[in-house]
Image (cartoon, rainbow, N blue to C red):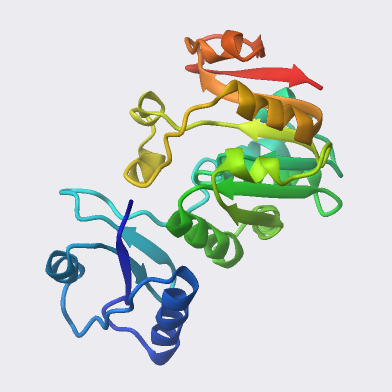
Length: 261
């Protein structure tokens, strides 16, 4: 269980202070005025982690030594979307067989990179929803996807169209009707997946490492109209255990598995 309070950046104007107050109410966590003290001072004094409301972005700080704060950024989505615009293919889009107008449910949102790419492909007529287990990450993603401004209009549009749900996907899936999404996507986070990816290392401390179960996959199959897609390490036993057909990618550390519904 992560205990978090909210404060502001060092030189906060009234707008930022009001935003911090509102955040404390929405997330039901205490607001502590900055008072020109360092974030580390407040975290040590209150023995809690900290959500910092800034003028440009929200940052989630942990008391762990040498840990970078977590904040939203498009990560790999920026260069992936440029490749697609140039006419190149994207492994996720091929595995999901995504087309314009389709609906896509990302059960493990993370930094939302895959959802951003999916949103670009399905366009304004489609729908992309992401589920994030950690309520602080979920809050940051919800605001980051709306507030981040890129020089690339296609990226901004894709981010703006994504809806974020806070909750554990196994429970959220149970409340979604049959055949509600064309594609249900799972990219479970685990330790090995993070070692080579500096872009998502700050999320390591906050991530949910809930494993996949056969029950969870059955729920995903019920919700999916066309296919369930799983991204996992190429040596993962989950593909076979859970009944996925593997799309092998030479020299790639991750493969995609699909179940056609």
